[in-house]
Length: 438
Ligand code: GDP
Ligand code: GDP
Image (cartoon, rainbow, N blue to C red; front, top):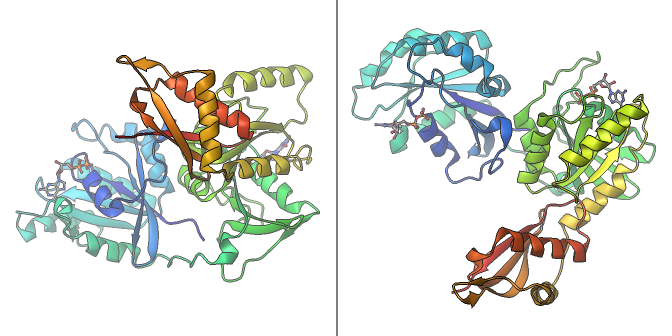
């Protein structure tokens, strides 16, 4: 397994980027269904073509107000700009109907400064003369690839050239899928690499060199006390050269990929900095993906006792919405508390994979209903009949009944908490879903 290449779609508004995005990703599941915070304005999706997979990012438009390119400065300041910097390849979409306009050239100049491969696509070629794309040649990205995205024309051709130099997907053989997959995520400089090295450097840990993996694989298999793990290293520890320089810049996309592939996510936070919004975004990504979670408040060394008190209060305030997440105070640098992460990781993993029979889930449901009846709706009481397990990591409990769509949120939370308590589900989100029986 490897981190997939990232392709960013860029261009003026209305040229057809999101249409192309939908064509490339088809019905594939988005990387993270509903992303919080800083990625709100972007769309991520998985795409693949002939055994080659990549991630597509729709960056939104440059120059939203069609007022020339004063707005490219604004654009550079936005997250979309970051998306382009995270991208390996850029697809520059232009509109063959409107022809080349000033902001296209402006974007072209910007793209030339990036030094990344750029594929130029002339969209909306349906109903215009073939020659109308020719003028875009002047922008210096070669012949534009003709396309009519809304008709699905030219998409395969783009995929063909786009993926030509991409690596083939590695077969997901057993050695690579074995064990608990653990992702270490967090903002830059919180201590991810230090923690990765500490986790792998422990005496009881045997790190394997995986046969057949490429050098830049970020999946590191290891064994500890008879258990197999794969560490997903978003910090790029393995890829650092002899000189201890950071080759890898922080990347949201890499973080999202790591979360998606992981069973358990350790969210690392820098105690010296306190808990900032971006930390909560990281946690939000893991929650959205339904992953088991452990929080590590790092750099717990050299804090005064006043500072420690302040951070502890902050922890209580900002993480009270996830009371089931275990929070560890650690020092990755000196190793304090790092060993204690393992039991919490296992607990979270086991909780996320727990198994239970339909009869037991139904019994618990009936007891819960008896203790506390659902409300009446239109003179009829909501009836909850039975429950079954619908999935793992995250666990999904599906409850069947009548008028379930009218069930108040508070009652849904009540049931979730009952199941949480009964099964001691520490460290994992729990999804309770309701199915209305006809
Ligand atoms: P974006 O702002 O760049 O993401 O553009 P959209 O994908 O939202 O497309 C803008 C408009 O152009 C929509 O009304 C699309 O239906 C239309 N459009 C997209 N692709 C094509 C195409 O190939 N041909 C034609 N005629 N219209 C298209
Ligand atoms: P990353 O960007 O999240 O991978 O962070 P690094 O692991 O590169 O750490 C960033 C800086 O924080 C480095 O200077 C580390 O030495 C330092 N650091 C990491 N963990 C600790 C810790 O537990 N205590 C202290 N005091 N410093 C730490």
